[in-house]
Length: 318
Image (tube, rainbow, N blue to C red):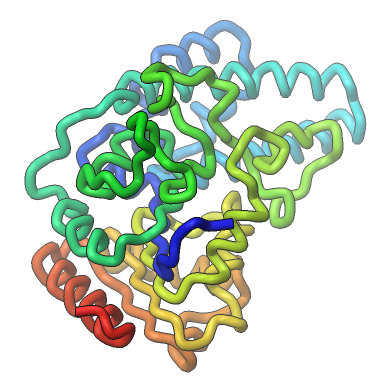
């Protein structure tokens, strides 16, 4: 169980690393990964499919693409085709290695965050909560920057305390050994409840891969009273987590939800309703819900400060 009393959690998606100036958009991987191109040019049909069909900045669309590719194989070859399933798994593992190599190159070690990046300043406000962090990113930069180099997320040997900072999808870098992990230790794939595929393709399920204990994470989420959601499009591939955050059982909670522009905020709202079965308007009836446009930097920082101070004051913390 959690060895701390924090009632808040910061949930970070790839938009956080992008806001630090790290080249981790899906479109940047698509355009700049030499490994991805090499695989596609040398017969990896999954990589060929991705290069031709996925046109987006969102990693969630890549993962949806994996789901649709699986369904296409099943439709073409029938359920349980062992030869095609083995080929698919081999090509999927090659894709994951290409992704690992690219992300390691652009953000595997600590990099300098861009001065004035939208996330800088917000992290200083979040720090006042002494929160738990849950990230879907793979980069050590996420931990270092989100927590403002605070010691409270670290163990005595300078490794990151996974109870304070959860890399739910694994990490490129192992802070305990001060070396890179292997590609098999990062999680890429689909949600087993919202994106079901045939059994032979179950290697795609995130729950089948190495990750932080799912039950513990969902327990942590359920017991919080203050949620910060930054850099998440609320996609299908992480539906399990967002259903635990946005649901009809949430009462008297606070949600700070950040989006990059009004269009992104509307997408997040629509995805919450579609994936979680609850509208933002319904959440507002029983909770404090604040949607913030990070392109309005000063306004967003001021509102973040106000909401956190209000929350802490309600707990008797000045």
